[in-house]
Amino acid sequence: MPDLTYFIGKPFESIEGEDGEWTVVLEGNSRITNKDVNIKPPEAKDLLGTTFVRPIFSELDTRLQFGTLDDVTHELTLNPLLYTISDPGFSTDEEIYPQVPVEIEDELPPDPSADRIAEGPEPPTEEEMKMLETPEAPAPEDEPPTEESGDEEESGDEESGGEETPA
Image (cartoon, rainbow, N blue to C red):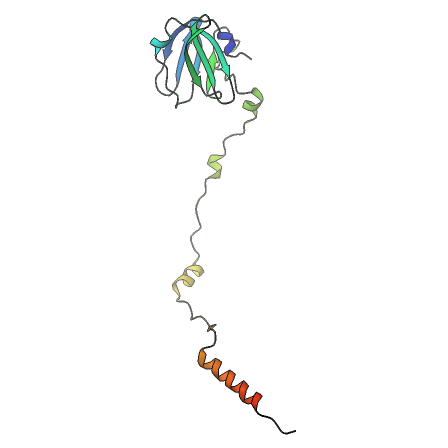
């Protein structure tokens, strides 16, 4: 699979596009297209007279270095999964995502978002509506005994405990 090393030594020609998707065009209509809308395009004047010196790959970013010979004068940083390359010399006319492995690209399932949208709660049934409209019955008294009732019990215990019954 082609990658950015194919473009090493090719002179810079132009920048196409503006904010959002933009393309670095190299000699021979070799193209490096940024697909990340958060990355601003470089100024064409900064790259005039340079050649593509080298790419630097990592899982966090892909850096494109431009300059003359081995003197780097400008560097572009791209998202490694959101750029494409194309060239008339490639066997395909399609854009290639060089850092997205083919096996991952082919195995991605379709986006299930449309099937996963919640429809919301169901409206209450007539029975539930009646229950909501009917005032609740007073709750049973589950209160602890008052001081008066506690005194009576204690005094009753004292009376029964204090009296002796004849045998």
